[in-house]
Length: 544
Image 1: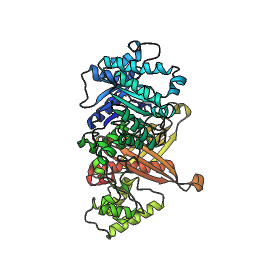
Image 2: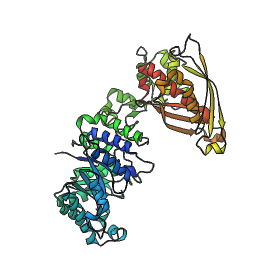
Image 3: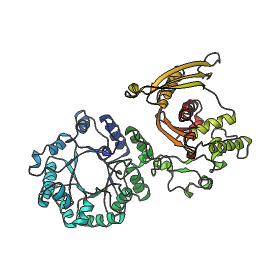
Image 4: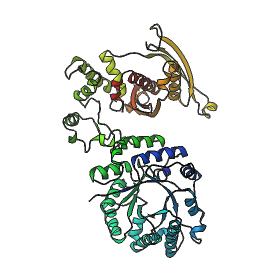
């Protein structure tokens, strides 16, 4: 019968080795607390022997009386160096000084690595494993052993790979974790090898896979099917090279589909929120197509698909998205049909029906705009503004008179300031201006490029009217695509901008032969949509 699967998260250690990832101590604390809230069992927070930042993190919890509610913090390190005793190894002692109650030690299981990389004898490596685990165990630590390159080692010399596990078991390891360090194994190989290990050892077996063949999730699940009871990975899958096993896919797969106990049952609905939060803290974009938690994981575009899902979601969804805290999205496009539009428009105007004159106008507007190069399936917030115009609900709020971009010289560019934007707008929102008369505002700002300068100038112009409502708004993504590339420099470009206020996200689009004008259109729509959404909560259906 399915039982407990121990979840061991390495986002703060293995994930931190991903290209472009650099956590501050504050970042690591935030992520640890988020994982703890979900019910993750172990959080591997770093190597205190090689990184002062990691040591500071551990001291925050051990020295300030801070504690996690459920998870145990793991300090990570290697076996002792050859030629010295474990008690004299500075890196091993740093694990003790970290204050973490549990440690994870990695050691060599592939004979090739022992002789050619570590330059040690095979017997010496086994002693290093046994001694290190035993010493840490004698100091009151819970010790897990990561058998580095275990599967490659097994294929090359199965007996020695098993000997490395026996050495850790003899030293008192509480778990033996089999690592597909190069990420080159296939699921059937993982299953067969793990099954043999489980049959041989009484110590719980764990799995640690990498995604170099795009199989880390499948390999982890097959290891569990073979008897592994601990799964290591990173919460959004990032890590060195192609990344680690993605826990945000493994956890719901095992818990919702296979009946295992992985995290707190009542926290499964916070899976998506946590994945997005961790991505934000890591300053990365969560893969939109990520299973379970991605923005498009439950997005439907084809008219027949949408019609079927509307009748019965099981027709095109493997689980209810609400179980993992995600939402169903029926994308607006010329191929999605009138039913998609009707469902969203009715949340704003319930009195409209499929064959109403307004719906016909909205559909015609959608087709007309997409023919010009607009793409609303990824920028529904812009189309929401166009819907308001068709329905007669549009309020100008503010309108552009003009903007100018001034390019700076190279001296300024070296200081990351290479453009200045000057703009003039009219604010015509009766809720923030007096006497119902439009107010003229001129603003100028410098920025790192014309779009950044325009963004800052527009915010400066609106600050006196909407400061509290815009202070938390920031751009999180900016994409440019050239349309009709055969027209060379006369081609139109499409700009997609994603924005957030820290609670919701929304996307807007601009199209023009001029990339700055297209950017301005998307930027202006982003600000207007935020202000309209604050006024009329019904329009939040066009955010996510």
